[in-house]
Length: 167
Image 1 (cartoon, rainbow, N blue to C red):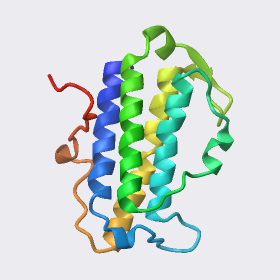
Image 2 (cartoon, rainbow, N blue to C red):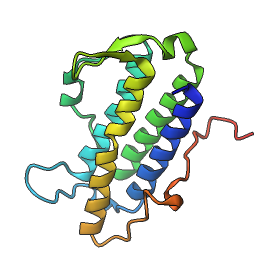
Image 3 (cartoon, rainbow, N blue to C red):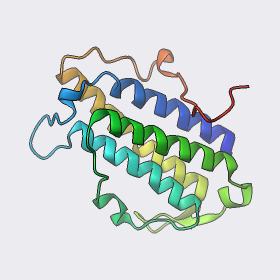
Image 4 (cartoon, one colour):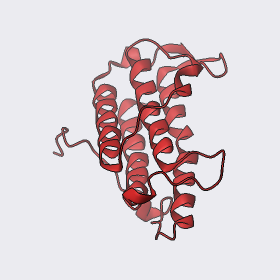
């Protein structure tokens, strides 16, 4: 997968997540369906870590699998969405500016110990987010929110960082 394909993939998926998160009101940000599950804000914290994992990997050091043991501190909906948007934009720009030799280098996947191209590790991180998107959709349904279609043709809106030219 080249960087342009990955950026489209990343943007489409982020657009889906963003659409669902925008439906969940502030008062439901700490909603936890049952004991032992993550709250909405904890899910977003985990998503933030996914983007930070990609950034760290591109910068040269694949984090250990314990990277996800600590979630970022989430304060409120507005600040957390702002942080999510920021780390997405930073990731998008970093991938866009990465040289092909770095993008295609071989790295070790910390969860399995297998070697794979960096682009594949980054794609795996985005694919791992699909179940969080599913959880957010279920949470929205449990909260009686009108969850938009996320995997239909109308779910293919892309999200491009504001700092990137749309020309």
